[in-house]
View 1 (cartoon, helix red, strand yellow):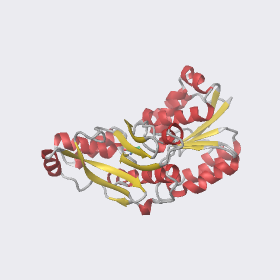
View 2: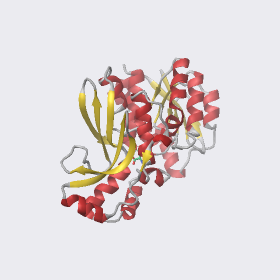
View 3: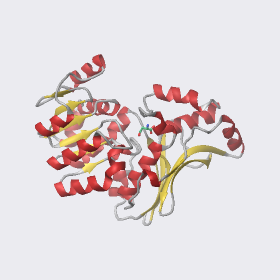
View 4: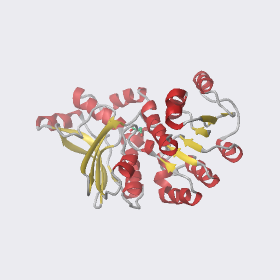
Length: 326
Ligand code: HSE
């Protein structure tokens, strides 16, 4: 029996809970499991088998989980095999996720996270800690939502040296830019719509100023290209200055504008770039798209849904399968 603890019960946590309620799908994937704790920032439910339907109902009705143990107390007092650390990202300090992840790894529990902050701040330290404790730290959901990237590179093209990764890593910016391309509305108007879709970070500047893309780039560089970089090493320019007129000029010449993130030996940059309209990276809506250049496999394009509750939860579930696939 796999004992699962869920920390964070926002869009991603609720998406994960909905998939975990699908017993038929999940039993086939990982065998027997039980959720032993669900916590958000205000409260929690701890039980040998948490009723997720009930937890979702309570969260929906009250906007929070009932008073109970906090995450730290759960980590210290409850036995579980894997923690799903799905709390909101803080890219500057990594907290509170960083402390949660460290404590879980030290205790000997596997960790699956969608939380970029801890990895941006302390990837090397966390991966060493996981190794020392003989457990795994998996983080597919931190980059590209449902779009496979981390396991694709680590597993499916294992043995390749990655020369570069270039593409679109932020669904919100891509949604805004592709709507500007079509409708020539101002970026502010479309940002408001993106918020309604629930894809925008709690701190919207993370998205529109390119910080979220840069954080993902740092995770890719450090975990897949054996680099040791941090956020301050990334040249970052966001999309706030892009006007509908800029699209007019680009489109006349057969180009559009996208926020492109790029990492290679010489480049670590997030910036708006002109992309030919017929380039595979020219995707629309909340899609993410990347071009991977690998020394043996050559070029690989990946396109997928970069944000959203079930989409990001899909990546979390794929990490559960990586750990426990029957
Ligand atoms: N705000 C992010 C995006 C969510 O729009 O891509 C996924 O990291």
